[in-house]
Length: 514
Image (cartoon, rainbow, N blue to C red):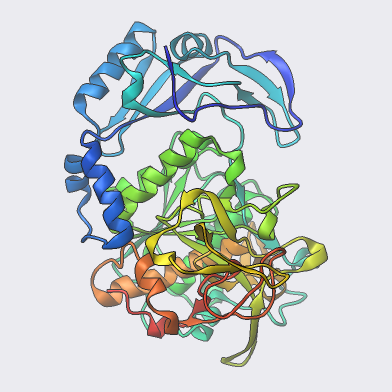
């Protein structure tokens, strides 16, 4: 048996080991396989960072970069030999889903699954590496789902005092008002589909109907729920839970691009669920999203290498097929909520995504009067940003510097986060309706769908997807409001790109991406 590279796991800090997992418990596991032509895939990755080729269709992607049928067959034979069932197989996504009991997965992959109690909830976990037969291991890039600990958190925050929109809306905005302040080009995103990834909670159609009517969007956007790994639209009834994230995402995109269809991909909050949701959205030949918005994530240090690389592969696939992915950079400043040191949030740190940071925005009428880095100090909320410990410096960030709050500027050694920004301060936040309640929400969770709505408008106006836009964004400094005031903890805003707000907030009418 050979260890799967990067699959090592340790218990969550503070978790209590409660003994072996029930050997009869049934679970599903996603196995991600190598591309049939690894050299072509590596060349595609390099091309995206230097001279992005034209996007290809989902069908062409499966033919050029999909899994080798021989690898799928070998995995199927391995599964059968160990009493596991193949319940789904997708060559384009290079994913095979296996089903079976804890006991059979333990034997097949050389693990010992156990039960853990943790403040964030009970979970099934493992310690050490996953094993695979020597002849099969080279074909396997990741085995996800044996461990079902919560992998990510939503990046939204309610306005202080409960954020009651009826009691205090001064200084806050509807998404439509923000689109006008940021000079979004005219249009409604008609003909586009925006994918929205959610790892819990849900939406109530009656709330959406009421909200969109209230902000003058008629007819309301088309919203469809897509189940991934048995996830579903399941409202909790609490605006402080994941429902707040789901409704924020839908209402921001739907307000800014009401002509676009919204496909909401619901998946379990596990590494397998998160990766599968993004992969499913990128390869969805039915809904065909041209943009995906993600407002969930966690510090790079909380991911296994295999899960992080599998996720990045899914984002690279999206880029190859011309799907733009916008991801919130996190709400805990330069620490990303880790006790010591500087950390960035993943998946925002992937070079195949547009990482969206946060600002505090003030306006008078139709004019922005000030905009600074979002950092509410004692309240603990601030724009996520910094330098990745995992991903290499992209060519389009070459020569940039990260400036410490003390004033020292150093050349970026690795991928810098974020790329762009927008209003995220809950005190200058977004008026939203959740579970029958009108509230004000902020956080970088609001910025990712705001940018997704902008890209939907640009796609519709240009008649084609803007696709993988990172290099184009960095070539258009004049298309941004440069944020030069404030800090997110250890990094400060400066002229040009910085590790707090990236290139800045949008001047939408000046963006030329097609």
